[in-house]
Length: 271
Image (cartoon, rainbow, N blue to C red):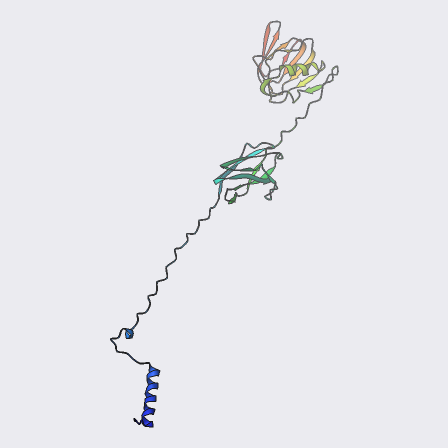
C-alpha cells in the first residue's frame, strides 16, 4: 500500500496548473513545433487610367454677305465639321427672323438667302450650325445694309394736243443710251401741240436708230439741255420752223437730200 502525503499531492496540482497555463512545449525537432510561415499578401494592382475623351468644338469661320439688293442678300460661312446651317437676322442683334433651315449633315460650307428685306436698311445677322453629335456653334454678330430703293421718277406734264406749252421728255423713255427710243420719242412728239417747247433731260443720252418724223409740225422747239443724241444721225423729216438747240453731240437733219450737222449750236429751219 502506497501512502502519498498531502504535501506531494498539493505539489503535483500546482505543477499541473503551470503546465496547462503555459501549454506544454515539445522538442524543437518535432514537426509540430516548427514555426509556420506568414501568409504571402498579393500586391494591390494599380488601376489602368481611363483615357479622357477630348471634347469636340464646332467652329464657324468665313462669314460674309454678298449679292445684296434692295430686298435680298446671301450669307455664306464654313463649319469645322459637317453640320446643319441656318441664319438668324433682324434689324437689331436680337434678330427675330431665321432663314430656311438646311437640316442635313452633308455640308461644311453653307449659303443661305435672306428675302423680304427692307430697302436701305441695316440688318444684323449670325450663322448657326449643329453637327450630328449635337455640338452647335454660333458665329459672331455681323451687319449688312440693303440697297436704297430706286426713286420713282417724277413724270413730266402730259401734253395736251392743241394747247402749246413747255413739256419734258418722259422719264419712262430711256436716257442712258442703252436702247433705241426712236418710237417712244415719235409717239411723245405726236402728243405735243405745235408751238410747244420740248425739254430733254440734262446730260442724258438718247439712242436714235430710226428717223423721227416731224412732217407738218410747226414752230416746234427741241431744247437739249446738253443731252447727247447717240446715233449716226438724229433724223428729222422736214417740218416748218423747227428749232433744235443745246444738244451735246451731232444731229443729222435729212431735208430733201440736204444733210445738216449740229454740234452744240442752234439750228433754225424755215426762218
